Length: 594
Image (cartoon, rainbow, N blue to C red; front, side, top):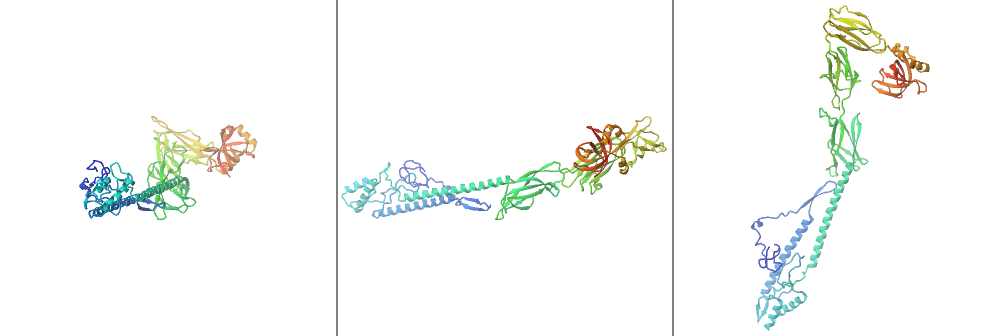
């Protein structure tokens, strides 16, 4: 507020000008709309949360202290105004003040002050008549003694005036500076206020640092949560160890289950399939999953912890192709048996047809008789859906040479036989010429010109796969050719009696020297020993030492038995000569016994 007398700017709370002492009217410059406003009496409140998560609303101590200081200031101003009115009333009655409540211009750090004329309550009597208040103490003293009239009130004032002039010097504006009566108490209050504010600030900083330190420690514990792959009910799973204090309860939202911390950790086991059981078709091979843990406090509240994320692998539905050996195979018949091994209970679809009911309930083997047309590539799409797995799909192509002259073997033609000769039935174009190129006997073409059917006896000159080759020709058309492989091996009681022992050095040396001749005759040998090394898996080939010391007379054996071999196992192998491999005999094992 600007002083109307000297132009000095003062605060609105000051009753008088700091420079000249002119009374200030604070309400004169106050806008009218300010009177309609009401200050919000509500102090600030802080929400404090203890270590157990309990929240409590507490007031700001600084607001409380500020309100007390404001009330003290108002009481001070009211008391000063009342004292001034009492002094003025006493002066009008002609009575001198009984005390000297003189207020001067305050020091810069004085909060409660009032610029009051210390001589406002003094009335000078001259010739028995009260005179106006003097402007200076020196002037008052001279005027009083110049009248020659003695007045007790004037004498008392002069005595006080001399004392004031001796003890308190005048300021630059001519106003006597007095020390406030309660300056020491005010300083004490000010110091206590500052200390209180510092204490409150220190407590806030302390509890704030403690809170963030606890949160940081809790976060560091959560960062130490370990996630490891495991097995749960023979299926892929993960084990999560969440650190905590013994006895704490940790609630997992996704699992709807609480876990007790024991030994510093809460152990959580989660099966991987839980995350994608109800998602339907899944194409991705991995998935990122997240657990949301909460710590249960003593009050029953739940304090969230940092989420725990990890990756899981979504396995393919298992399928193993048994026959044919590869996904592309050339066939010569209109019917071909494919076989697979899948997980029991799987859903299997071949070219959209559901063949799940043909899966063996004990072994999981599926045999499918595929119809193969003479059009080149015949593609078969196989889809497998196993529980807790994503769909697996393979494609098998069976190639059958396109034919202008139809030529097919009978659908009941065997793939394996233990007989050295077997009857083969076939059908072709009626009137076509038929030629059997593989070893055979007894070709019958009686019905060839009418129905196109003919038969013959196929003979086999070696163990293993033998080719049956047939051609059909007709003038003006391309010759059709069928090559069919049939696996032949004698029955065990016949095959094993033909075996020559290899555990003698003489027989082993003779085989090494005449390996080609023995292979052409499919000579059978008996090899006894322990499997020392697996060379490859499909077909399985192993090395066996056929000596008593187990380090000499090595033999390479190819597994054509129904048993899967393992390193270190001891067998009696019955095998026929096939070829040589890395300086050792190569035999095809047809039967083996422990």
